[in-house]
Length: 200
Image (cartoon, rainbow, N blue to C red):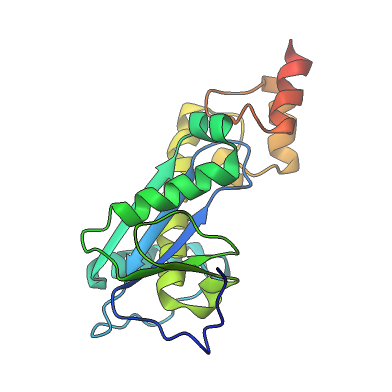
């Protein structure tokens, strides 16, 4: 269900949920859920893509310190390949909500569809620009995934993973063609399949 935020009030203990990593050719999908504390507001929450890396990291620490509850969860590459990326994304979101230390009264999900949850939920298109809790979730998810991709860059040098975070940039595609796929590449994605075929 999609909602008009002008018509539906946000309840206390509403979790905001967002994900990052559907488009990359490698690495996990990461989702986060956040229940903000109305008595401890956090200034500057917005879509993580519209913040500098430094500001995202600063806000992530503030979100963890000041929220009523937060959780970062994931779906692994093998799950993405087995389920497809959409279903893996829903799974990561379910895990993020289930992992909250405080049970939410409801959940607002960024985008146009909801995972199956044990609490009422609604989808909010461009929710990371409209709902502070969703913006907070987008920040936690992106900071967590970006940090992991920097670590994976050290394990799999030559692909530029720290720079492009797994997205299909020209540099990434060139490395795939020359070096082939790593264990963290998503075999179900066509560019990765083509790279494997070209190397065989």
